[in-house]
View 1 (cartoon, rainbow, N blue to C red):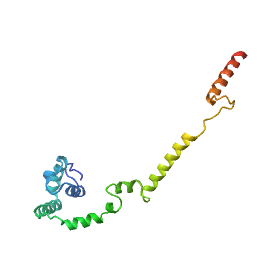
View 2: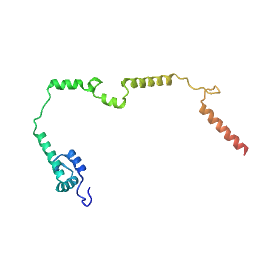
View 3: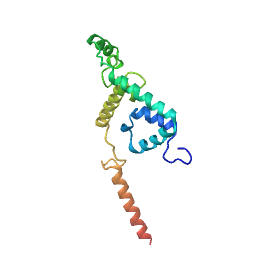
View 4: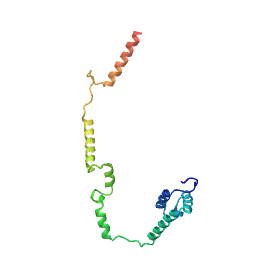
Length: 155
């Protein structure tokens, strides 16, 4: 904004809004439209930028629509990167794992899972130091209780 004119925007912002919303001020947000009208009244350069954008939009709107031939569409789709690298999800996989084929980390994960399950089912159960089958947690509870009883006897 320029000094003394709260409702006039600078040219850089005006040009950015023209690129974003086009040459018809009716398509602009209300607050930006009011500021743009102030700039248009004061700056011939802004008028030229808006007129150029409007002319381009009219030329594009008046151009006939063209459709690609089926042969061209087939050739473009065959040359597309996702066609060679595994389908529509190839771009997503490449973003997650840009280091090569995605089957490698998947295979490593599957191997780790299988190894963990096999190890969990085949590992021997812990045996107590006393050999009576009680767990170490049970031994700690008995020792803590005995220690507590011994301290009460000292008092």
